Length: 334
Ligand code: NCD
Image 1 (tube, rainbow, N blue to C red):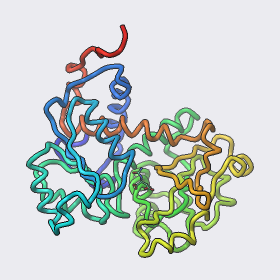
Image 2: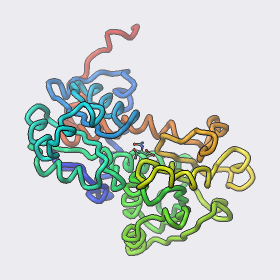
Image 3: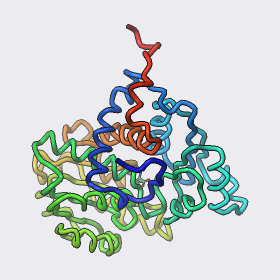
Image 4: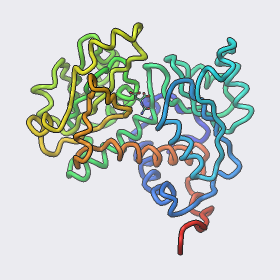
């Protein structure tokens, strides 16, 4: 299992054994996540949720996960309202906040910020996205979801054929997911992006060094017809030096029901870390697929809660105490 009291900064910290233990624990979290059972195993613990970039699901799911385990949450939601605008260093902020809380979740716009923050923090730090670098907990929930979806189709992560589509240069969720997937065997990755937005070279090399195969392409067809799963990503407008530059790529890849039915295998799983860009000119993942049985995006978000609860239990070393601190749910009718 993941070591107690450790920082979670990169997906490369994880082993196959870690993942298996974490996924088992995530499965045990289901009744607590749905509030069919209540546990107070983290009663008295405080999470500082520090978000210096926009977020909906990551921030709320970390907060919900900690609260569902009986802990409490303090938070900031943007840079403007903090002393970072007064020139305070990340180190000082880390040192200060780690005196208030027992664990910190950090989202920051600079690659490497989580590491810098962790070095000055006296409590564990979880990286909830640092610039275009990594987003390890999203990678964990993505691979957890992918494994479940594949299992339901009698397939497994070993031997997977996966297409990653979109802005692979800036997509930190794709970076973390790929690092986790290299732990498995014999995966074929098809990396579909404009040539200027390709996956960073060091990542491509590490995939190949781990014994997997890679195809690099700039178009969906014909590659999209040969995969078990598609991981769509948004053009990460905010990471371009000039946001106007992103405009030329908007709408480059569009997956909709008609396209899917014509070109994809009927059991191809569709994933997206969200948010998807639903503006008319973008629409990398059309809402007309929302009722499709293979669209896993809302199962990803549900699973995010389970993974984050499991991670908190592991980091606090309370995995075998969750059950003992279970209470009846007073607001549910008997
Ligand atoms: C992603 C992120 O912030 O990196 N969102 C998320 O956390 N689920 C992806 C994105 O913003 O496109």
